[in-house]
Length: 404
Ligand SMILES: Cc1cc2nc3c(=O)[nH]c(=O)nc-3n(C[C@H](O)[C@H](O)[C@H](O)COP(=O)(O)OP(=O)(O)OC[C@H]3O[C@@H](n4cnc5c(N)ncnc54)[C@H](O)[C@@H]3O)c2cc1C
Image 1 (cartoon, rainbow, N blue to C red):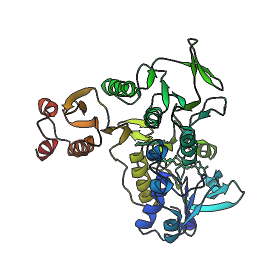
Image 2: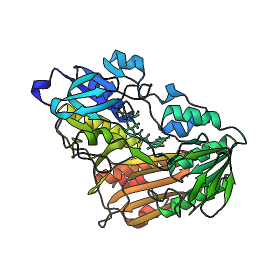
Image 3: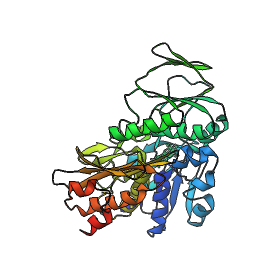
Image 4: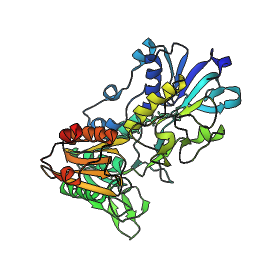
């Protein structure tokens, strides 16, 4: 941080998960200066995973998703500016402008602007998206028993919405353009398990289909089929909010590009969370996961405080659908070993050429894979070569392997 600017604030743009976590960490780590957290949503920072699960089911509310409420922010002396997006950053003058015109000088600036749901070109009243709390509430109000819902997109958001909507008594058709569900991030065997699960729960899943158009009461497919429906939810991915950074002259690829310390290409500006493009397993990539927002939010705060540690957290994510849970940790490699779990669950291990664990993916009823995935994370960190036959044997405990 520039010494001449020490009297100015640390500012975080984006009051989502990564931004909220960064603000909390700065205080936990002893930063006592002015700290401003700026968001464009009207809410204090909250976590998004419940939006497609508990909040959509009606079993959770905003307070249940909260990372930190307004009272706590005030107690910690974190100035939260809500519903007033940053419209411009001027790195040379170390200042930014809010949508209402006000300029704020900064000493250090964290961009944690996340992303928004990728939208179809035309806006229509019967087409809904899911990224924010308010979008989740609108969707929840529209999902009633008997609602005929078409979900466009067989990624995690689409699949979780389909599962929740079935639980609410909706008739659900799910359209996926590719040959398998969540094919971009999941191995084929898990995609197939997801397909069986959803079809078994009564979802009409259609693969390899393309959308021609959406009418007020139907979806038209490219092959001429007409699917009558009351509502369409589009889950076709996330668009990172990089415009602010690009306009300020920061290097931007698929996200705001950072070095190993989460520093952008411009001095005193950092990035974290869904919007951040960083090197993982030798390649620039973004991670759109809770775990990444949590870890990078925290790490960016430490870097802003001058701690010189590279970011090397093990990636991972989870998804809950019906009463099944999916969890992953680490990265996928070509060498895979499978372990069949009781009750038709599955644990996949990804090894490198020296048989060291690089990643794992678990699929089982309830939350039962969580323990195995935690042990896999420890095995990844240990870096000890593992025996393929032992990994495949459900009788051999991972805890035992960890002990060596
Ligand atoms: C419905 C849903 C379900 C999910 N479920 C899971 C799950 O089960 N497991 C999992 O691992 N991950 C899940 N995720 C992903 C996880 O929630 C995200 O990776 C995480 O929220 C990213 O946090 P973030 O802070 O980077 O971005 P965000 O949470 O998007 O926060 C960024 C904030 O910045 C604001 N902003 C943008 N531009 C500006 C500006 N110019 N000025 C001010 N504010 C701005 C945005 O509006 C937003 O409020 C889910 C996501 C969604 C949407």
